Amino acid sequence: MFEGLFQPMHLLMIFGIALLVFGPKKLPELGKGIGNGLRGFKSAMKGEPDTSDEGTAANESGGKKT
Image 1: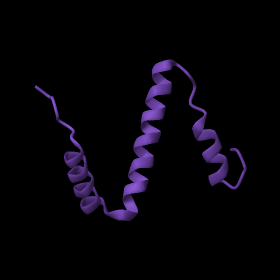
Image 2: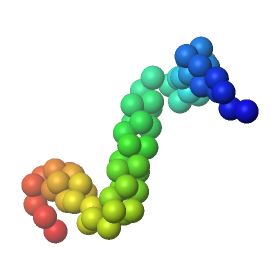
Image 3: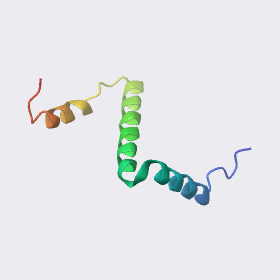
């Protein structure tokens, strides 16, 4: 039923439409946000504490943890 659903031409069309909708400046930020969300979801499913936010919070506040 779903054989050949994501052929290379289909993926190029999806990427092209996403590029038109979001623009070249927002697309990397969107990908990064999706990646962080998936990483958090995987760690939550494994039961591991999420430590990736501690490093970014320290960088954003100038190295000071609050």
